[in-house]
Amino acid sequence: MSLSKEDPENLADQLVYFSLRLSSPAAFASVVDEAFAHADPDEAQFYQYLKQNNRIQSEFHVTLIHVNDRTANPGIWEKYKADYKEALSRAGSGDLTPSLGAGEVLPDHLVWDQRIMALAVKVNGKDGPLPCANANPHATIGTADDSIKAFESNDLLKRWREGDQSKGSIRSKAFPGGYTFGGSVQANFAG
Image 1: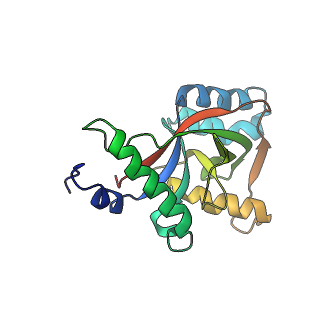
Image 2 (image 1 turned 120 degrees about the vertical axis):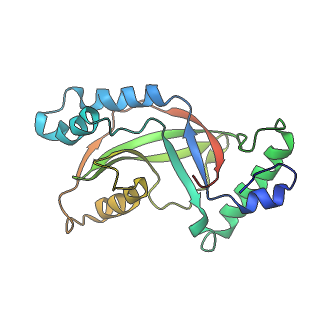
């Protein structure tokens, strides 16, 4: 598949999801690390496992809407698709994923089980909450191994919010207050 700016509509039809990509992944990871710095060993065990086994993500984003959700949320999908085509018309010739605008992530709770860790968040744009089709907006922190996909954080957070421990124990920790993380709304292709 060759991508070219020649046909913005064709490009927009190939998008897989829209996200709020955090601008400073190192600063974000550092604050997550600090959240576990003084935790008791039992609470910090899975986080330490992720760290020691290089299983913490190097980039972080919050999925705002995935192509699979466009039928249930056509207004959100079409809004970001239109924003993408507008940004594409303003962007330099080689930039197929220009910023669609600034946003910020407001952390809520770190949530994990024996497989995956995520940070439940709220997302804002310059005019208030960003449109988000995800019932449980989050940034995946890491997974126990390569067989576990980051999108499984959605199920983890759904079970956590519902108090469902049927698939195993779910732990959570309130994120330290006072933090917001800047980011950029982005269009994303497969791969």
